[in-house]
Amino acid sequence: MTAIPKTAASPARSPWILGPWRDSLLIIGSPILVVPLVLLALTWFSAAQVTAFAVLFAMSHHLPGFIRAYGDRELFRRFRTRFLLAPVILLAVTVPATVAGLHSVIFVTMLWGNWHYLAQAYGFGRIYDGRMGRTAQLDARLDKALCLAWFVGTPILFSNATIGFFEGASRSGLPIPSSSALTTIRFITQIVMGAITLLWIGNAIRNGIRGTASSPVKLSMLGTTMLYVWFIAAFPDNVFVAYALFEIFHDTQYLTIVWAINRNRVDKGQEFGGLSRFLFSPGAFRVLFYVGICALYGLVDLGSKQSDSELFRDVMLGVFGASTILHYYFDGFIWRLRDASNSSALGVNGSATKTWFHRPWLKHAALWSIFAIPAGVCLVLESNQRAAALAEAEQPIAGRSLTESEIADRQSRLLKEQLHDRLFATLPDSWELQYATGLKLAQEQKYEEARQHLEESLRLLPDNADAHVTLAGIHLLKNELEDALPHYHAAIATDPHHKKARLFHGRALMELKRYEEAQVEFEAAWRIASDDPEVAYWTGINLRRNKQPRKARKWQQRALAIDPDYQLARQELQSLPR
Image 1 (cartoon, rainbow, N blue to C red):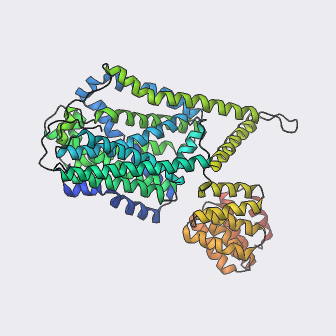
Image 2 (cartoon, rainbow, N blue to C red; image 1 turned 90 degrees about the vertical axis):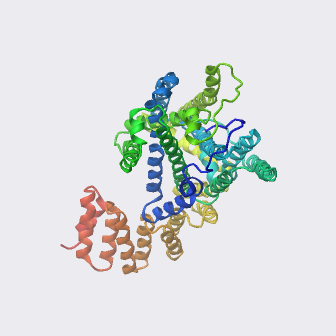
């Protein structure tokens, strides 16, 4: 969405797009709808499953733009070259990049995505002002400045939000700031965000005093959006849950405005493709069909992730990466308010604005360079970084040359270690990085150092079930059974479906000869993972120690039914009486 130019527009009869109730629920107050639904879903499903649904929803909402691009005959005639060349060029870049394991294109796409999100909020603001005839350029500029400040500034302020961008930058070979530099950047960011917000509020007050008040719907929408962006960055400790909360919110708003534009275009008798006219004509069946084909598009992406072929998964990751970039690219011009068909459908003025470029192709090339040049630079830097790690990985160990598989594993491990070290140096206040450091040290049997990092992770995030389980595991290895129990209790209270918490809690109780309590935990672990032979094995061990050999035998048989090569279960079964 782009700004409505300053003209003598007449206010629309209604300040709403769809009406007060639907706008309030689906656009302005959509966080009130999304947050309870996501939290409710998390009581039944894991964070990974909820995130998978959010990704499905994200991919599904690409389809309406593609339907408009390739189904609107007049629009296709105007932008034929873009619609035909862009998919081919992007697929030629994204598919080889993902197959090669390069992250640079994904990182630059993340940055474009943040612009895409803030542009949507800005566009809604201009629509609501436009429906009241408020088209002052100062209002438009301050709206854009507010969106830029909050969508860019808020992730900088919170490590949980910053880590994804810094990880992408570091993987792409770019330097990231030191911890002290980041502290300075955050201080400056707070000042800039505060100043822009005060200017925006002051301008709104001035407009009200002068009798040219901004749309109250716009003010409410931008206010709730900025607060929601802050909430998502500040409060959800799980980055996947944060993603789900924002993506569903964004997609709900997007699908709402696309539906509004297309329905009004049909009602006004504008030129349309056959499929679009069918989908956006009145009728409940058409709504269901529209939702169904959008969901089907998302399901193709979800289904491809379940393939056993790594190559196929990588290729499809590249295909849907191209889909994401096309979505951002097409949305930059097919829904713009300067287009008469869109502005007419939304009841706002859509006159042309001035441009610095006298030749449209020159402007288009300049805009594409904002994506292409950083992506190209990052691809070169990332390739150099991987080549350096490969050269180090190829070095012989104790005079023995390594196999190709060993070299690939060593290169991957080196890259991960380098990435972790860079991120940890910048974001020591990240519970996630503190936990990863503690886990790594525990695996290296440096238990005291590991304990310090795990405890710091729990100070930053007391409900980190994985950190509790790892810390309890250290106590278990040191035979500090009573000290391990509180951590298992905390992990289970946080995540009752945590298999390792249940399994190792059972083992600790078993070692304390609290066999009945241990059995409850083993059976809970079995309900969570009935395909895990280890769970069956330890359930059998507990029953044998509790003098129930017949039941113990059945559990060892279950373990071997799952994995016939599980030697511990076979040995245990042979030792049990028939």
